[in-house]
Length: 205
View (cartoon, rainbow, N blue to C red):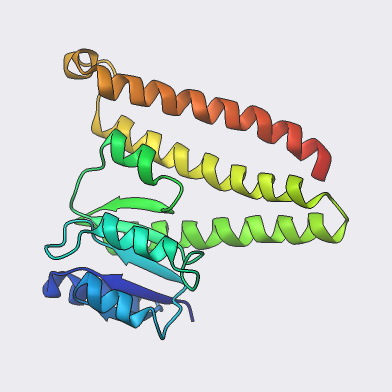
């Protein structure tokens, strides 16, 4: 049974999400503040953390940084489950540290889908890494492959999130150079990563 830590300072939200997860067959831990969540992580290693950004004492971005700076939790995947819209600046700063970004309110199906996507991606990448390592592929190449596959998938999900939020052809976006530039940069990054991934795939398969 996969374990999930839910971290949010709105008690009723945490309780609702915990019930949703338990209905889906997950084992849960509930934290009603960032401080409480970090305390739980000193004794528990969950398979996934669901983290709200908008918390009063310490916001989710600060908690995320603490999680990723801690050797015991640096590899624990974090999915942002939040009521805050993601900005391009936040995406660029935190993309390497989060597995997905889901806006509340969320249905059971949407939440389960996002969670299982994270688990499936990690399992698939690890399987390919194990195979390539067993076959003697250079470790640096294998590591780069794993990073690229993960990054491409996450960046594509971010791009889809922004495309859903903003009509790429509307006048607001056309007038907002920061958003337009961020989306173009993200699209260019994905294309460059895919090109490099194709080069690497020829070496590991």
